[in-house]
Length: 295
Image 1 (cartoon, rainbow, N blue to C red):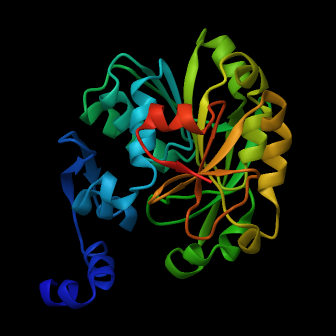
Image 2 (image 1 turned 90 degrees about the horizontal axis):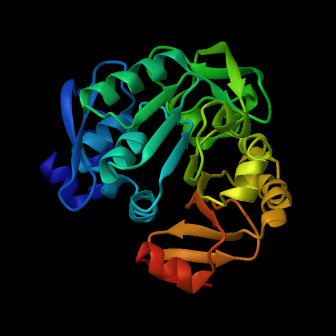
């Protein structure tokens, strides 16, 4: 691959990330920190990319912000944890934090638990459930055959998403899973002081926020959330989320390679899907995460 990577780096990385990789693999986070992942024939190509290039290289816009906020948070909720990459990173970066990972898909949840045990983490709780606005059931659609990186309650979402159409065309399975809301969960689990929430739930973002209204009012956590642009999903999710977050005086930032862009409204971006919602203004946020904030 060296000649290809020399003349076409992105194409070379694309090919490399799809070559077979099995066994226990070391993943670099940042500043020399590493963790282990189990990789086999069911692993997604994005997992292989993490193992080959490191978390900071694969998601350079998210990792610095997530790392700094995780280090100063007492309780961290990973909603849509998948195989546990950010769960593990948070638990290692802040050994004093309580990290709670929510993952509804059985195949991903099994790997999440295996990876937590593999890294000997004692400050992580894994919850096999979807997260929404009440205690109920959720129907999720996900591809068959390997551990998916996405599962959605809307089957048509997978057909609209350009990445899914090309790399995960199906077939799909339908999973009926338990669903909980975060307000109810933290009350039952006697958890308080939520400092950071990561949300990656494929069009269920509004439901998650509606189910954590007490947390938003009392703990006012930082929220890192992946969103898709309206042109992909034919739905203005950003405006929906603003109706909830504006009640609690949250401010909105887009995570980019250059830093955090302070935005008056939440708008899905085709190249930068991750957003930060926080009570902090630009100056305080820049000091907290050690990254530039621009308008």
